[in-house]
Amino acid sequence: MRHRLKKNKLNRTTSHRKAMLNNMVASLFEHKQIKTTHAKAKEARKLAERLITFAKKGDLAARRRVLRFIPNKALVRELFDEIAPVYTERNGGYTRVLKLGYRQGDSADMSLLELVDIKKTVIEKKEKKEGIADKLRKARSGG
Image (cartoon, rainbow, N blue to C red; front, side, top):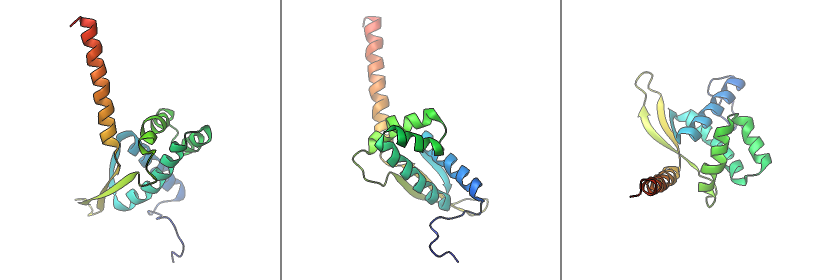
């Protein structure tokens, strides 16, 4: 019976499940979206939302708590400096799970787990950097 059980075991041992979810969340922060099964996406969403909430705090203790789950310091720096500031006004709901249909090989229910509102801000930052780079190039070339 599954009375009061809060998480889906995903047919894996505890260590395998934790490692898998940590890797999925790291990939989510790196690529801003991942394609996975629906059950895994719902479990990874819980961890991702929690880590973004820690990153919004921005202090050293929160950074160390996030590093327990994601040992990649560069990725944690990106989470704290680029991803978390996007969500300062938002109280939860940082991710979205979209159903994609069924996988052809085994008919598993597939979903897309993505960060909400991140594409818009990342694109604006890239355009701003490109605009600054263009101005520098023109100033250096004298045109």
